[in-house]
Image (cartoon, rainbow, N blue to C red; front, side, top):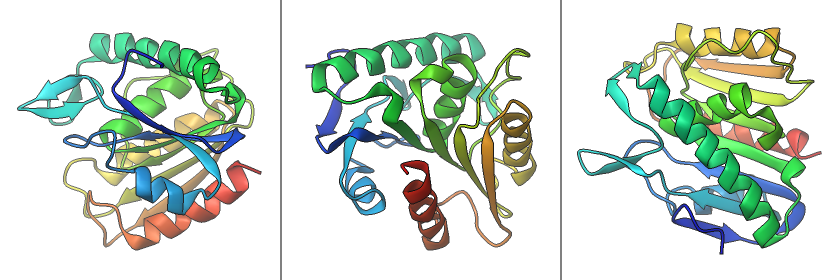
Length: 205
């Protein structure tokens, strides 16, 4: 079922589905146990990115660290959005109740979903994201809850880039919670996870 992406689906409350989007080198299994802990009772949908960079799965290509292949990102954003719609029909969950949880590369494609196909996500937790590209001027995120978490010692994504993304999301109507840890790097910390769990409890209502 739901052909198009290698993925894991675990059924839960059909009104609450957590879309897990791994970072570079992850796969469909990486975040499943974490998702269960962070959103007990929610359904879990976890696809594997289709792009390989030195053998490591990603959701879209990049030209170098910090420089994204935007045409590829846009095409793969649409592909992922279309697949999410089919998956909702195949598995019987409410597409309006999908909340994204993305890390690094996964956070960037989740941000692109919010910018390009906002109807596909009810909200998103974006951990160590960058601003992938300027959002369209007519974007209206209509109060969608978004968490953005950055680290002051992140050598891959400067905190200023995550903060710029948060500002753009807020400017286009999202309800943004910005979490900044001056001591953390690109890796996810326990404090990040505590913030995500509390945020998800609110985002899922």
